Amino acid sequence: MDERLQGDQGYLYLGELGSEEAGSELGVDLAEEAYYKITGIGATTAYPATAKLNDVVFNKPAINAKTDDTAKPFTLLKLAFVTNVPLSGSKQKFDVTVQTDDFKTPAEGKRPELTGNIDGYFVDEESSGLRNEILERFFRRVTDDGAGAIVYKPVKQGVLHFFLTRKETSAVGEKEIMQYLPVIIDSITVDKPMEGPQLMNFNYTVVGSERPNSYERVITA
Image: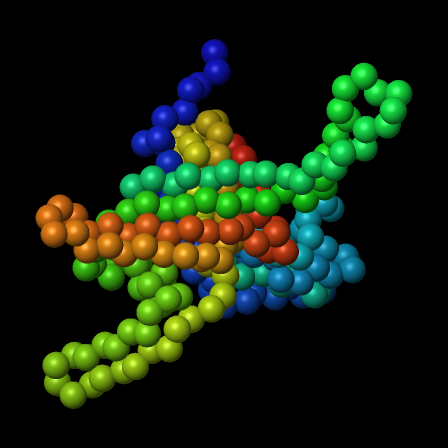
């Protein structure tokens, strides 16, 4: 019987890229049991034949990287302030109706656009909330330790690497479903009501050149 997945079976993570690892002529195993971002593909490569630059791959069993094979590991950090993660896709359609058609005939566009928003609470807990990575896309922050060390931080730009588990499991033989969502943040709302929790909601658009995907992986021992 098909399993009907529930919202509490997955979480949203922020992926932080580590240092690049490189292969060699004799082959070098990628070091971490983790998701990797492919940054270089050699003429004779250990990566899957259908993989492209910027794709993600899970390094189990260890990939024996060859000359010019390079990749960066992701460390996944759970976004503790998040409540809901809506995600929608759309495509253009073009009218190709001719006079002999009885009904309108559409042609499907090639490239989908993925957008959504993330709902959560404004938390004061940097270690698990990771809220500053989002806030610093819109607000200039100042940190003051009270002892004279003051740092002014400029507004940031750039892609954030989100990982959304649709089904998260460590049971051998079961399938994990992970969506890789590299995004830019379009807008943010950080309301402060008179009563009740302070909310932190933002809209995002997925960046196609970063090779988003839905990664289905069977768990092995």
